[in-house]
Image (cartoon, rainbow, N blue to C red; front, side):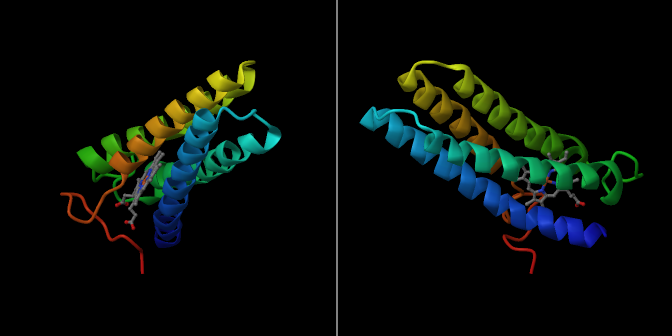
Amino acid sequence: MYLVVLFAHSIVRWVVLGCAAWAVLSARSGMRSGRAWTRRARVPGIVLAAAADVQLLLGLSLWLFLSPHAITQGVRSHYWTYAHPLLGIAVVILVHVGSVRVRRMLDDGARWRTAARFYLAALVLAVVAVPWPLAGMGRRLLPF
Ligand code: HEM
């Protein structure tokens, strides 16, 4: 079970990074062109939130139960037990807070700007959260 969830979590990282980049580019292009905020404009944010939620669920099951570094297991690691999960949770919070704020705004320009800021912050944190191969706690780019 551990390896299956770790495999999925590793793959979904690319979905999260890709969707975050898409959401940022789409919000920046809306901001520059000054076009109206339509239902379609919400799609990148909704897809990003769904991907981030899936990654959160996989990450939580690793963190709570499955990983050797889970908080219920003996092997604590500064990176895997604390730093990485906190960064991951911060990514999910940014995506959701951004979407809620955008939904509550009335001005289209402010919507594009807010979406661009929150999704860019989420993208940057997601990049920082990834254990890139050359880092001390690095893992492979793909799990196969
Ligand atoms: C944007 C969010 C996240 C990204 C991009 C991400 C990415 C990754 C990657 C690439 C790995 C290594 C997979 C491998 O070994 O092949 C990993 C492992 C792990 N992640 Fe995340 N993660 C995110 C969110 C989270 C969250 C929210 C949690 C917990 C609440 C979490 C907990 C863990 C744990 C416990 C491991 C496994 C450590 C081990 O068993 O060695 N992650 N993550």
